[in-house]
Image 1 (cartoon, rainbow, N blue to C red):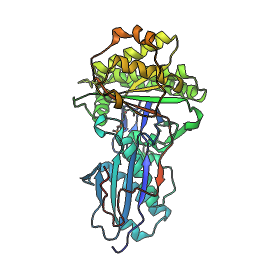
Image 2 (cartoon, rainbow, N blue to C red):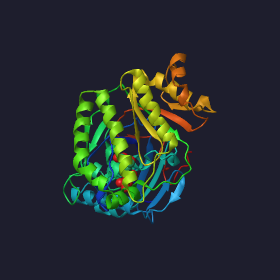
Image 3 (cartoon, rainbow, N blue to C red):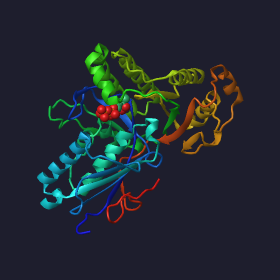
Image 4 (cartoon, rainbow, N blue to C red):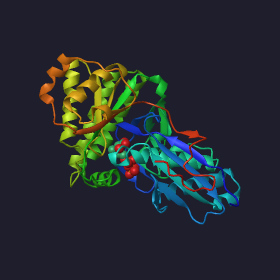
Amino acid sequence: MNKMSEIITAVAPVNIAVIKYWGKRDENLILPLNDSVSATLDTNIMCAKTSVCASLDFTENELWLNGKKDSFTSKRIINCLNKIKEIATEQKSVPADFLTWKVRVCSENNFPTAAGLASSAAGFACLVSALAKLYKINTDISAIARMGSGSACRSVYGGFVQWHAGVETDGSDSIATQIVPSSHWPEMRVLILVVGDTKKHTSSTDGMQLSVKTSAFLKHRVEHCVPKHVASIRKAIQEKDFTTFAELTMKDSNQFHAVCLDTYPPCVYMTDVSFKIVELIHAFNKQSGEVKAAYTFDAGPNACIYLLEKDVPELLSLIKHIFPSSNPETFVKGLSITEVSNPELLCSFSSLRQKEDLIKYVIHTKVGNGPEFINESHLLNGSGEPIQIS
Ligand code: DP6
């Protein structure tokens, strides 16, 4: 090996929107029609990990994704790499010949991609973080991650994050900013209910394009609803007002899925099981006499439940009761909890009880920080060859 850069390895988080991004004003630059708000999830539980390096000896750019060789031809990856090189050229952050070296990228998620769990957001945030360090650029990288996948720009920061739609045609003001760090609301917890699903859904990219073309309701949502939702949820987050936060989260998710149904032909992402989860959360909140949990659904049937740490044991016991599992030992993954037993509560919900294994498993996690760099467990070895880890 003649000349090779050091290997840079980053880990980056998943984020789950509470005010949804749905619809673009520019397909190539990935500019959204509306602002969105999300929470970044703890990388200790779910993350993407990416190693990158460059060498004079590499004859082409190469990519490995989750242990398999993939082609480096996707327009989105190339857009991200070119933008980073453009900034490196402007900033003269690396020698000019380094910019001509080819790169290798090896990336994997520590959670099943097939589960439809916002893997592209974590993946692109990770790729862009690692490449930005490789080329030593000094800039806000959210606008670059955005060119990989819109929602990825929010995974560049920890805590609660807002992606500003912006108004500029070049996308320079379509960036993400942190509303508050994860330490602001340490009690916030997230349960991801992974719903068994064999149906192939329309991708977010295609679904939102169809909604922009055909849904009059999308236009109304963008103009009249989202600005209010964003302003109110920002305030609720800043004031740690869980009730308002939870109600807005549920209403925005429901409105987003209403837009999907208003799309022609309709995009149907939620399943019967998703709606059973909605029913359970409303019944739980009613029985509690207060709003203790909020659901939100992306472009698939999995539920993401926001709640406070103190309420996790009770809701989890209820979920296990209503959605029994044939693998109870491995049903809940992630953060551990102290189990509670409240037979009376379970009994009062028995009419909602479902058949086994409608929910495959639950991931218990919390709000966390943005991408980080690690100096060990790289996915590329000293010669830039991929290391098969999983
Ligand atoms: C429903 O970011 O996956 O999860 O920008 O085309 O890559 P592209 O779409 P993507 O869309 C995410 C949509 C969503 C809502 C959200 O995360 O805000």
